[in-house]
Image (tube, rainbow, N blue to C red):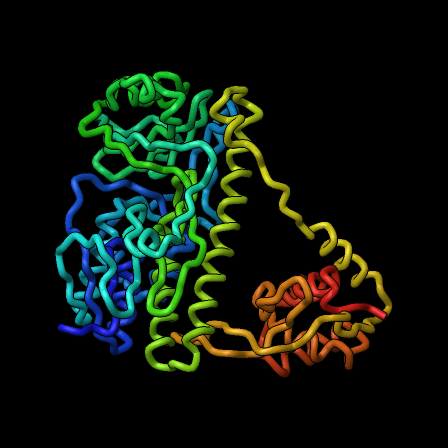
Length: 460
């Protein structure tokens, strides 16, 4: 292990995930981490993380850890009354501390042969390096890739609270979220009637700017709320508060020759939410696939690294839009500077109405006479197959140079190739199933309507 194939900086969820997968695929891996933390943030993971746990190979270990299982969220947002949101189909998520999640995955990685070195890293080491040093951004800063958001800063002040009895909420497994005039507060349960309660504040508009202590500012912010002031009135602050910088940043590029920015080393999206840890796990999974491809198939190296960078950028942009939408919903109920600074929602074009119109036209049409749209090509583009990045045919419209392969799980390349020979939608569906295999009729019709709405297919 003096010269490992891959060096991973940081033993958080993303770094641990990448190390476990790479070791299980036969690579020698060294994780360099500063070790234990004084305080760990509690977070909420949605039920969809179950698929990631399966892909990483840690589902059984996660079950043995006996994390609190959540059934949803309870939200007071924009001054509205409580909105109790249960996960669909009675699914359950996880409530846990980030450090415990990382430890569960890292122990599996060590068992798979990963070497862990406890050290602080200030300069990037030589070799193939995956950086998961979060906000510190060892590689990102060394290569001048970190791009700080120019908007307002946000600080998370987090404390651990305990009650003698259960918390008086509709479901004590829920994540609780409340907006108020000068910020918002959220809380995650950890069992034994203990909850982490986080106040998200603007350091320039709170008592922090006037030199107030973290504890005084934290308690003052909670007293401004309606629900959390009630919930904590007969609870005890047993630890904290601790402070985290929760301001946004991203990267100019997320990968290059011999390096990748994984998870929070590449980008951080405000507000703190379950999306952050899920994003980190997915980033670690994808980074492992890309690194494996680079090491085993050097001819695919440039394609694989470009694919990783493009995917991370796409996910970051999506989460930024979701964050702005989330914040803008509260702005209408809180006419204060905190929300005005954060509610500049960018218009994101949506073709949902166009897809619905195309779907309605399909139902009313007597037949189907569709051809591939002008300027739309079928060309090879990188994609994931198993644990590798490969080149496969994609539908490439003029406005989507990276190409499209699937919509709602439907192979749009097969759809485009089969459509010109089909005169009825049922005929096209039957031809598609014969070529590709079983497919949901609902998903098939949605993908066909989307292809027509976006001009990938043109009805003649």
